[in-house]
Length: 77
Image (cartoon, rainbow, N blue to C red):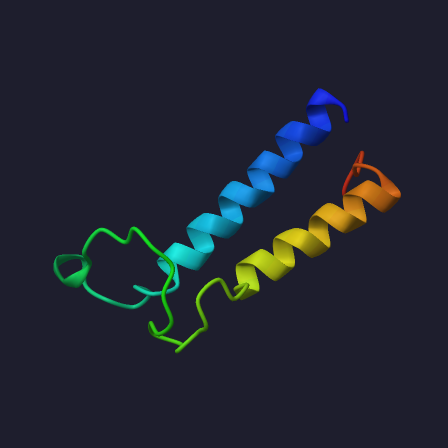
């Protein structure tokens, strides 16, 4: 694997982990949030521990599209 591939996979993994951990404390006040250190069932949307979030799914879709079609060089409005 290339260095770019390794870095891309690391970015996606980090994003997934952050989304999974933060899904337990969405829509809560800052004072009610404790440091989340492990995956567990529950949270605002009653998710299963490690269940992908909508953010995770969208990031994977974008990564797959970029891998298949290559980066966009310009945007069309």
